Every structure is written in structure tokens, then in C-alpha cells.
Image 1 (cartoon, rainbow, N blue to C red):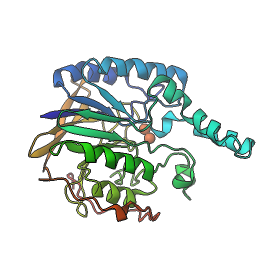
Image 2 (cartoon, rainbow, N blue to C red):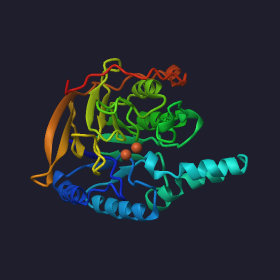
Image 3 (cartoon, helix red, strand yellow):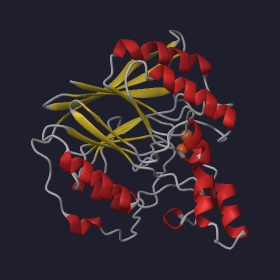
Length: 310
Ligand SMILES: [Fe+2]
Ligand SMILES: [Fe+2]
């Protein structure tokens, strides 16, 4: 069995919940994970000090298992990058791009869209945090720099990775932004969510790991059977009203995929299993349909979904 501890939105800085971080750190070794997947927003303000704390925390987790990480919208210096771009009329576009991810790369990982192969699964990390860029433009001002998008070049890289993976290995994609609307927020994090879900399903993705919404959720999508989405809640205290911090534990067996949400319990001062969902795994990887790789820019704003809590 392959076991992935899926955590997200640690937000080192003011919102960091040290008691919960310590409890999680104590819990992980006993869970004996094959990998730890961290789906972004390691920091709150993209500050050096916050990244230092995040880096040392990741090092502690790596004692138990290899960690795969992608950046979140809080981990990039997008505003400074935009200012640089405007200031030099785009002449230093590349410099602005480097500036945008400079702290994340210095402290966390050089690779923004990493890959991790473990027994029983292959995980493709796709960077969806691009700040203000053509693919993430939105009319909703409060989403400016917050909303993300999946890039075609990253999907192509994931497709190649999946093609080379052993037949029985689960094809897993990790992104920061949630493609399904959060039950409380009513928002999804991706500008091109419809296209992203279809194209990721078409390359044989069985499981998407994501965060950003700060509310845990486990979804199976009716229109793309066999695709499951694990949205990890936040470890920080930036929780949705009436909700608790949480993370998801993913167990991948030969026949089934099981996701258990561990929720923070104030009295016990620990994370306890709360929700469990079991899904059959597809018998064989889907056929690739490269025609669907074309991004038509559609954002229908909603996706058919089944919510376990309704
Ligand atoms: Fe976040
Ligand atoms: Fe986020």
C-alpha cells in the first residue's frame, strides 16, 4: 500500500498555529507515509523569516518520508514582479519572473513543478501560482494575484511522466489551487478549472491533491469517472468559520483509494480521523486524447460534483 500524508496551507508567519504544527510533526512518523505532499502556501507574506521556518519544518517531515512541494499564491512575490515588468516596459521580463519565485527557490525548492516517483504512485507537481499573468486574469478584483491556472506545458510534462510510469502506479497530480468550489467559500481557485479537469483526466490522472480553499473536501467528479480530488484544509488558524484545521491521509491500494480527513481536536490537542471515503481504482489507465490538450479558455464557473457531506 502507498500512503501519502497530504497537507496544505501552513502559512508560516502570523496565522501559523504552532500547537497544530507540533502535533502534526509528532503524528507523521507513526503514520509511516510513503511520501508527504505539501500543496502550497507555506508562508503568509512570502517573508525570508517565514520561509526559514517552513524550510526547517519540511526538513523535520523529511525524516519520515520524501516531501514533494508546490508553491502557493502566498509564496510568490508577484506584486514586485509586476512593478518590475511595468517599470522597465517588459524589457526585463525574465528578471521579473526570477524575482517572483526567488524566495521560494532559495529556501524551499528550485523546481516549481516537481515530480516524485514512489512505490505504487507517481506524483506530478504543477505550479499554478503565477501571480498576475495572462492566464490568471480575472474581473474579480479581489481574486487578482490570488487565482491560479494550470499551464499546458506542465500538463505535457505530467503526461510524459505518466506514460513512463509502471502500469499499476497511481497517476497523481498536485496543484495549489482548488479546482472545485469550496462549500463555504463558493469559489474555486483556478481560472481554467473546466479545461484543467478535463485535460488532467485525459492524461490518466486518478487523483488531484490541492489546497488553497482552507476547507477540507473530497470529491469524485461525475463527468470524469475515476478522478478523485483531495482538497486538504489548512494547518494554520486561517480556517473557515466554524471549521477546524485538518489534513488528508491518502492510502492507495491495488484495488481502491481511501482518503481519511484528520481534523484538529482542541480538547485532545491532536488531529483525529473524522471523514473517510473509499473509491475503486480504475482497472487500467485511460487512453490519451491529445486533442483535448488545447486550452479553449473556457471557465464555466462550476463543475458537476458529488459532495460527501450533502
Ligand atoms: Fe492559503
Ligand atoms: Fe492559496
